[in-house]
Length: 573
Image 1 (cartoon, one colour):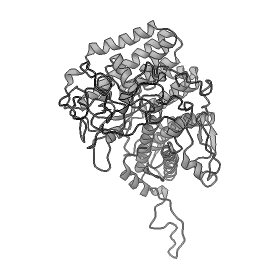
Image 2 (cartoon, helix red, strand yellow; image 1 turned 135 degrees about the vertical axis):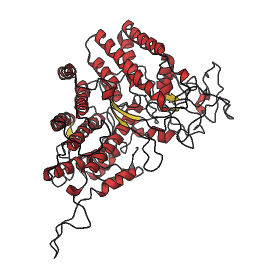
Image 3 (spheres, helix red, strand yellow; image 1 turned 30 degrees about the vertical axis):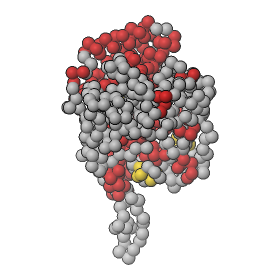
Image 4 (spheres, one colour; image 1 turned 180 degrees about the vertical axis):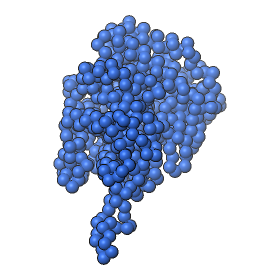
């Protein structure tokens, strides 16, 4: 789990310390050495809410994208690869004001407790803190919805009331969804009049409450699409007050500071290091984009080598297998991988396949890195030079501190391109869906291409041209219109998943709702266990809450997931 701005968190925590009442001869009712919650700085409380929420979005998105092959998943067995610790941090950030997760460092302070403190301050103050509370409620509601999507249920009715409910019970998914929609309505009422920010820092929309209202409606859209409430979904679309252009995109902006606190994109921090790239990129997604000649591929991934052992390099030459860097390049693909990239992807897209749990070879300066979008890394301009001593492949300048955009990327949460695909998901005709597909691709590619400017050292002459982009989109839409059955569904789903790169949470929902795309690569293991329909409850909560028992498997379905039970669904697993 990633935690951002930890030193800032410590400062905020100092302002949240609960007071101990005491009576002395001097008539003091509050210890002069401690600070009451209502004496905390409201602007720091809002900062902590925003940072906790941004960290949650990064963690939620990583888990979802790994399961849907947008990112690489390291585990031959789903149950073992998704332990109870997986969502410890996001649970703590959503509810609690102070937690330390063993092995994960200090967790950003919690959303709910800080909202409650803001409400207490607002009640006692002549200053209007409606903006702070409204923004906090949006983030709390969205986090609750995501917890339900990941776990099947969440604490809601008894959450945040430790005096009466020290061990809160979980509410059903339906109850939490309804409660979260109610919280969004409260947030909308608070923000409708355009309240003053009172000097606070709005890290998302710069204090523009009209954009926050669009974010509220867009969170409602994703809720209605999950539950299949088409009437409510269509009503919001008809109202035309949702995220429909890049100017309204709901995203978190990272910076370039390498010092503590580092504010760079988490993927940049783990891959643009003196020791090379950290996590692998997904072979399935890179191969899909390569085969499609997707104009976003040079922005999504930065190749450090012009070829991968066991595959074909950029010049069309076979790269000999290499046991030291990619041991599986000597393996014969198993039968269940027939038709899929098993080990090595062509053209230097050095990643790993879903579930491959081999050890870490010396390939930090060989494997593909996250690119300029959305991580603020390097744009891939094919600058391959000298040959690597081990593999013989030609190398690019490689990764390192400050390279490319320096980490000044974004955490995509809800982009206008995502919403177009939601409109396509809810469409009732192929014509409507094709139009949504085209709109989503146009917005996605246009946004991605703007990130090329972050890498001032790159050779922009190899960037896709306007004609390249138009041809790509028209070819995809034409292929969709010409296809039938599963082939049509797969084209739409593949483009949706590609568009979700960097912010893949909704891919997990779509995959469980539809079973598409059926073209996703299988797990490295023939029998990895049932595909996770939900995850284990956070182990820290299970250990400390006698009203909660841990699940014994990952087959429990979210209330809106009415498909056949595992392992027969999704069909590709």
